[in-house]
Length: 257
Image (cartoon, rainbow, N blue to C red; front, top):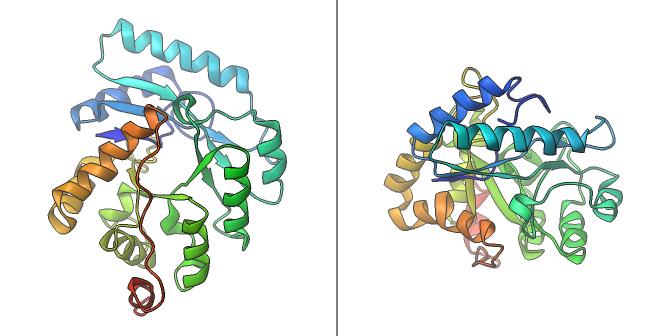
């Protein structure tokens, strides 16, 4: 498996605090079957002062330690980029890390004040030459019954990532239901751990893989846990979700939510 969303880079955000904690998490995810992982510390230049040089420095230190301990994993750098009203400024400055130096970027929004112009944000992201991946999309309740907005977002060639913890039913009921509808209709492109630590925000990717494989088939599970992520690492395009029009899946998708 490949994990494109994690907070295990030590000392830079609300994830791992020390290099020892980072290494312990890495050893755990290796045991769970992860071969590649992208470290995505939060990037927010409006509310939190980001020390980009420290991110790079700690990443290099961690890579050296992984090599020193001969750990069988490939680690890459990225960011989870917070988009709100200043998103255009962030795109213009381009000081964030894309996922593994690719054209793909991982973006998130304020779950308590979800912007209504997400589709516009995705459009502008593409104009700037990036492909947006919306992190933990199941958290944004504005999408639960807004068929047109979800269609617009997908039509702007945004990709959807859901958290493994939601698949194994560790989050709220509505997120869980929405997550499963997206999976059922193959609108999800990535499942990731969003791991912060080994206690309260832990790793469920292996459990989630088994659930998706059993419920939605091996082929789709392999695609969203590995194959699509390999395309990101190689900076290649891959098949975007097929969006069916009126009267199709969307009428059913939101009917019961």
